[in-house]
Image (cartoon, rainbow, N blue to C red):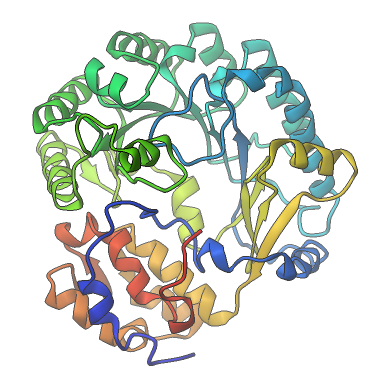
Length: 445
């Protein structure tokens, strides 16, 4: 491994945070390094037996929304595409069937499942019931530790929540953003505060093990008052888990287009403001009895309110992604499906796998990937990396750790690395400084 890959990190850390562009790091190496030429790695790992006791999970992408939010950069289609829902879900089932018979999955069952979007809860109740049943007939998840389903407030009904509960869902994540009608309207959210309150009551009545509420700081038109009033209401609601993201402005979003055209009446907050508001939000949640469990999430009970989908991936679990644009990680190989809705459906119907690009990680890539992702949890164990990789992370990342420590973002000792609160709210800003030299300065996606 290149023990000098940390050199020169100080200048990288001193660069200004870009006002627009991608910020949140979800994969390493960066997506832009994944190519069609690396797809041969996918066939290789699919034809190999499953790698021992490595955890395995399933992600299912449902890319339909009533309307695309102004800040959204995920693949999604509005109601003009709803006539294609059945064809798309059929393709997802076919895709899972193709994988199920490959050696890599022949004897495996998922320990975690995640339905994301888009807005999975837009599907009609009978469709959800049928879809969950078809997937479980191929790959049962009755013994999974966690099954998460994303919901949007206006699409929640009592009947639908009971169907999810009966289908094995244990964790519901409700996309709220803020409890302020004006802020919601300015950012293209179709729901309002009354919808959130009604939906939350329906979700609670179904008896899910964990209910998470997604919030966001940095939205157009927000103030410190709208954020902290939102937090007070969420605390009164006794949400099990509260996840807070900082607004990004990627180039492929309606928000960026409006900003570029100069049509926004109020500009979004800059990173300094977002960091400070997130710090204060975490502090208020902790004062209310919540425990911070990652750079984004606080929970009421860190034992009962875990997030297996996130934690397992940060420690190297395999993930099989189904659906258009979804990405997978299998035994050291990243791969992503075709992003075009029709191209994805047509490819699966033809009997071929829909992967469009891939990246085969070497030992150094795998170590760095797990290290940077575990930073998001606020602490990294030196013992874990010594036992798994035979590596001394304190020596391996010495220069970068020293530079981050000088800025007050983390501390380190023989046990490992611990992020400060200032470092935790900047973790995605910090992570690229730990990349191998060949992956620095490249376009993220």
